[in-house]
Image 1 (cartoon, rainbow, N blue to C red):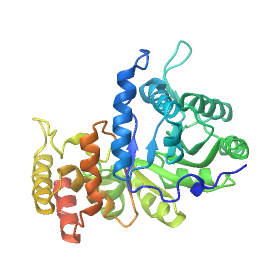
Image 2 (spheres, helix red, strand yellow):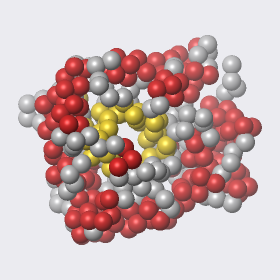
Image 3 (cartoon, rainbow, N blue to C red):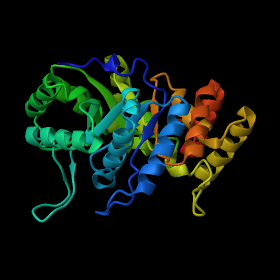
Image 4 (cartoon, rainbow, N blue to C red):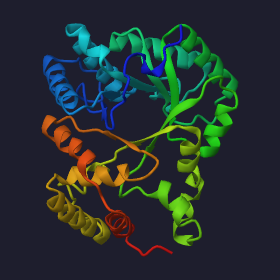
Length: 322
């Protein structure tokens, strides 16, 4: 049985709730009632502002993030049916036999999905992402794993994370179904995905060139671009470090000015900058605080002009466009 993307969520939300911060620390401590309560409060806040996509990964707080939400679903099963659940696999922690590494082998993918389903307490995952490119990955093995997961009804759709266009193209040639998501680090302080195209002839951004064409490839192929760390660690929305570079400080001031103009919090302006891009970027907000989740949702009503968008972009670059 192959589950269509719209089977459980007809209209995916414009924002996603990133779940990396739930479940306690990155250690082997147990999930507590406090962890479940905090996650449930954040989830309720997200649902209240129309956020229905949860972004997980098997490694988040060493599996405790998935386990925490699994406990929420166990106590309130009806909540699961209104959500789109996305998780990732492919990163392995160091152990007694090997260092931290990536693993996109067929058997590891299959085992990782079963483990995530168990922790989440659900029968299916709506979207499975390959977390990082594995230098040893073999597209045919990945294709076999995906086909098994789809035919069993365990996973409806697939995507990638942290892959550029050439990697996606190489992988897609072996797959029987399209990749529908690519999740990248994208924010006002992480601009390689943008500079690689708009400033390709500027020697100062040579390190961005591998990302050139990735945004266009995703647009052409109908791949949903998602932005992880879209708030840039909060540096532009109230958590500016004392040692921040002048360009970051100035950008923070512009964000505050625009937030006042639009009567929203600075988070909304930072996210609105991403969402103004015609690629339809979907920010994955990583906050665990209900009030900040609600503040982020205001981004959908900030109609940045072309001039305001470029003012933020050029200010954040700290240099004129070439």
